[in-house]
Image (cartoon, rainbow, N blue to C red; front, top):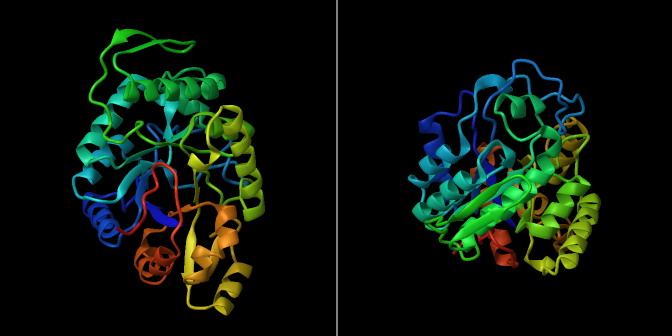
Length: 330
């Protein structure tokens, strides 16, 4: 299993000095990846239901302003040299797919091949409308087509496209990404459509799984992985090439009794996994197979103890991964 964490993209910690320190720390501590998230505008009022909260509402402080993720990744690429840089997730229908492909390819070249595209369909109708994006009801089909077009932009030359949602005559799209086969795409979500999308065209699965009503426990995660693998086989793909990941808070405590007490008092939106390091973060080999091989926590302050107590043991254990998930140690 390999570990990464999400950087603060909004609020009082979304400052250049803080982001530089966190990114440099991730590089120095041999983390596998750091991720940034995506909102372009925040409606002052909305009726859309947030899928990762039992209340249907996003966090009360989410209107603090999000840094644009691709611009932020460019900044982070300049202060790091090894750690991979990803989106968790980029809402694909919000942006022109050819421009997005060009920007990501440029980032991949300038970073030395370290980019991961975490891709999602979005959930906030009001944001779609404000951006004059494709119709909200068509966002899944638009995402599928845009991702396929972006792959062509990364792997073909010249590129020509005649689809339902985008048309383009024969053009040259350069530069190409450094990474062979293009930038790895990790699709978010765990609806039936998201599982199909992952199996048919993605390089990895990147769900959020720590909040009701979308909490993912190991057995359910494994069931959904089986569905993804089924779609991959139908598409003529090798299911083993699909990287499995999970975004969830991770809390490290001194020992198992402490972990048990913390788990009993946990809030519904609290950490999905608690326990003493290194066992709680790694799990047994069977549990790792169930819950994925790339874990991402949204709590950067855990970076130092995680590196000191978990990653060395995990490095000794080893294990292969798909595209976009490099080992945390060289």
